[in-house]
Image 1: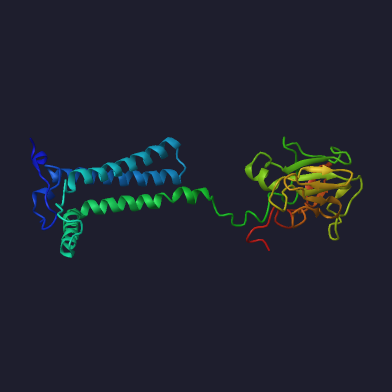
Image 2: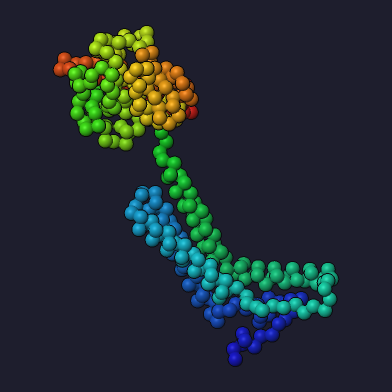
Length: 311
């Protein structure tokens, strides 16, 4: 029978640091300490590698492998520390009455501190490695949150890709000519070259409507914006950014299908109904010598719903 199996319960009162029952379970604690230190070091390395892989958006298997390996090594080291280096029981206090005296309670607390604290203090290296590993993991665990927020928008919300002379094209990339739309027709157009990009689909999309065959002015100062009855408005609703793609020809209003905001295309797309707080921005147009519809400039205000930097 082993020494461990022959141990009998002892009283906690008066336990000393050199009591044989306080010895670690491992017969070679120095070797166990080295192995645990290696596990903690490997855990730190793999956790740091996981952070790097996540930050550069590496392949999913690399992200998963480094995270799994890092947590595994830290866990193995922590479990091994508790199993092979911490004092082993059982420890039983023989009671002869239900309530202990104050001296007994003080002795119990002192024994617990002495039994566990001395073992931890004697292994500062392992404690430091464990703390480093958990600290690095705590920092790396913030990476998914920070990365999921995406880059700062900076000034990207203030403008679109429409520029002076930009051709209006449909989703296939075909340039729109003056004779392509009949009166009452509508089509979604984009700045040439952006129709299949994320930004093009997000902020550049514009509804092009032909309300007549004559030049049309929606508001004072926009006398040249509607050549031959063509009007162009941002397709992003000023409420929550839904696509305003429904056109009621008889009423001559654009309708947002999400919350039924309606915009009168004849007076600058001022909202007549629904929660939208502002008109749809109008894109100034002109028709070139070849009959293509092009932009005079970008929108004169940010498109879509309001944001924190919008005046």
